[in-house]
Each structure stands twice: as C-alpha cells, then as structure tokens.
Image (cartoon, rainbow, N blue to C red; front, side, top):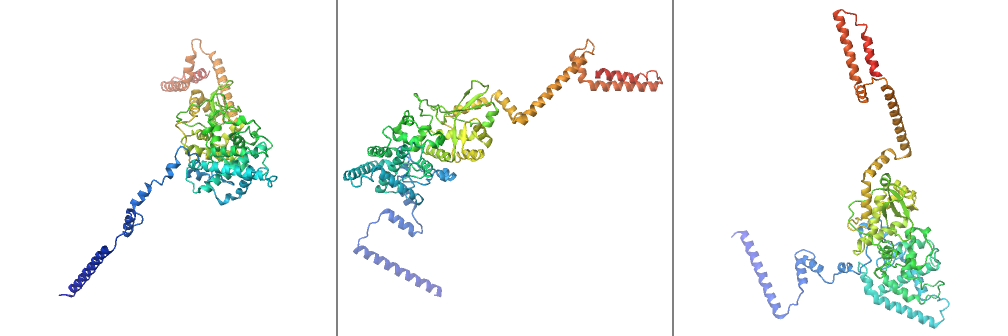
Length: 572
C-alpha cells in the first residue's frame, strides 16, 4: 500500500470519528433539554446571515407590507393641506421656501438659525394671555384668570392635536407635549402680531418688533412649509379675544381672515397701495371660509377667479389650452392694444381680450401687477401649493405661464411698463424679465383645465388673421423703429414721385404717336424697343452691304438717315 493510500485512510477514519461524536452529543442534548422556539423571521435572518448575506429580501418585503408603516398613505388623505415642497422646485430657489427668521409649525421646529425669534414668540404669548401683567402681578384674581385661560387654550389644543397632525404631509417627530406647545406658542405669536398690526393701522411697524423684521415676517408667514392649520388659529383667536382689554381699537368687527388679508396685502400690490378699509372689504364673503386651510390657501382664494367680491360669482370657464400666448412685442406688432384696469371687483388674475371701442384692433386687459423681490416668494409658494394639493385649481400656474410667455426680453417689460400694466422696484427691466422667466422653472403648465384657454385661443385667432399677419409683417420689417419707419416712408415717397414722373412722360409721348395707335400697342412697342432697334440696325447694315456689292452708291447716303428715323421714332 502506497503512502497516498495511507493518508487517505487516516483522514477517512478521523472524519467518521468526528461525525459519530457529533451525532451522539446531539441526541443526548435532545433527551435532556428542550429547544427554544424561534420566530420565522429570526430563523430566516440567521440562515441568510450564515450564508453570507445581510438582511433577507423576504424580510424587507414584509417590512414594506407592515401595516404600521402608513406614512405615505396618511400624507395623501383629504385632510392634508400643508405639504413639503418638492425637491425639484426647491433646488431652483431654496430661499423662497425655507423660513428666514421665524419657524411656524413642525417642519422647521428647532432649527438653530431660527431660535432668536423664540424670545419674541414668548413675549407675544405672555401679552396675549396677560395684557396688563405689569399692573396685575399682585392681583390674585388676574393671576387665576390667566391660569384658567392658559389651561383652556391647552385643553383646546390637545383636542385638536390629532386633526392638526393629519394636516401635514409628513409625520412629525414631536411628541404630544411638544406638538401642543408648538401650536400654542406659534398660534399666539401670529394672533398677537396681527392685532398689533391693527393697532398701527397696518401702516407702521408694531413697537415690539424692529422695522426690518416686518417685511421678512410677512414673507415667512406666507410660505407653504411655515403654516399652521387655520382652525387652530381660529380657536386661539376666539379664546383670547375676551382678554384683550389693553387694545385701544376694538377688534370685535374684525375676523381672523380679514386681519390676515389686511396684513398680507402689501405682498400683492406694493406698499403704496395699502389703504385703510373696513373689515367687510377683506372678508371672503363669496368664498366658503370653512374650506380654507391656512394663510396661503386664504391668499390663494383671495386672488382666484373663482372667488369674487361681486354680488354674483362668475366662475370662469376652463378648458384645454393647446397653445401659449405670444410675446407682447409680437402682439403689439399685430395691432393688439394694452390696457390696465384698477377695478376693485376684478381679481389680479382676471385677464380679458376683446374688441375696443376706439381702435381697429383688439384690447388685452390685464390688472396692474407689481414686481418686487418678495413677489417671487409669494408666487413660488402658491405654485407649490397648487402642485401638491389635488383639490386646488392651478390658476396661479396658468397665470405665471401666461406672464412668462408674454415677457421674453427687457423690451417686453418696457412695453408693459409704458402702458401702466407692470410696475417694479428692481434695478432694470432685464432683472424683471429674468425673475418672471425663472418662476416657471421645473414646473409643468396646466393645459387640461386652464382658465385662460379662451383668451389664448382668441389672441391666436386674431394673430393668425389676414389683418394681423399683414400688419405684423409691415411693422416688424418696415416700422420696427422710428428711423426704419422714416426710411420706409421716404422710399415710398420716392417711388410715388417716380411713378408720377413716368406717367407724365408717357402722357406727353402719347400725343406724338399716330392716332390709330392705342395705349396697349404703345406698351408693346416700348417693351420691344430693344428687339426692334436691333432689327433696324441689322436691316441698315444689310442694305449697305448689298449696295457695296452691287456697286450702287445711291442709297448708301440714305442709310444713316433711315437708322436715325428708327431710333428717333422709338425713342419718342
């Protein structure tokens, strides 16, 4: 037996020994002990890990099917109204969606850069529940009333906590105590700020805040991710209304919605248009106030064509918009007139197109619009709200695409500014055009239910008509500027004078023609002058050659005279 056979036999005996020993010990353990029970997931996970993998695919799929994981389903229910801005829109301009100085709601709660305003929130909270606390610190009745008011507000917030949580598209990580505290502090801050603004007639900065804060606070409080449900604010507004004895002006005639619209009005029309008006003017009479979810939704209802201050609400028809509006420069070349309106019953998005009373073309009526740095923030958040809310008409999106196509260059901005339609506080017309053109980035237009589809269709039909095409061609190529226009008129005048001179020459030459010669024959002879003259010269040369060959010089002297007769006859 060789050496290799001995090694193989020894290894085989060792393997048999180990196998028998393992079987014996395994049976002994079964007879004296009881094996513990394992979950199927644990056994599957252990088997998969032994085989060299991480988490099993079966376990991952079961985790997805776990009924406890309901984050996406709860974020898309009918109560949800405060959304996270889509990442594609946020990448275009992050500052338009993130709060600058104050955090409202759970999305930006606890951000380190926004903690400076927490002191101001606490100040408004104390003032709202204890207006005259400097004079009432020793009054036990006032202290008890303050504690009772705080407890009532806390209980009300606890009752509304579950519904308020469902209003946000993302589940908040705050516990119950933190969420209720957040609603109380943030809600009281908003209500206190609105009431202080009322005391200053909405024109001056409240004394408790600095001047630079007020415009920034307006922009922060209108952002989509920085909202509280409106029913929370209504409840706090009702609970704290009885204790506001320190206010000089009565606030019983003002509702929360009216105060908010009056406070946010500078965001839409500029500070020069802020006027003192009764609260009934700002109350959304013809809109269902119960359906309004938050301040941004309230502002959206205010400017929407569906909600009107007229006695009869005229809902605009909506339809499929297959084309986009042309630029204002092209429309002006085709004869479209521009007109702005200051009618208070018309909404900022109410655009019409029709025939004017004193012009050949048609009139495009656009409400006056103010463009400032904050306008991009307002419009971007409205578009984000329309894109996230399935029950909201995309009227602002349609309006912005209309404005984007209407303005393609700084010259278009200049035309709108000249006719009083557009006013801006930016550095140049180019900056305005850049701002307007960037509002619709990473946004798709609403082509299925656009409220401007009829306006765009009528404008396109007018631009494609014969009058619009001819006028547009002439203005674009021959009257694009005053210098080109003067050159065109000069050329037309020169052509007219040349035609007059030619006509007078023809009239004087016709008198010398034979009486039987008509004007038609004259034109034929004039057009065939070159051929006839060549024929006359050729005949003269032939006669001269024949005369030389025949030796007859009698008619040679007459050839120049014959040639001249041909030339003079046809020249005359």
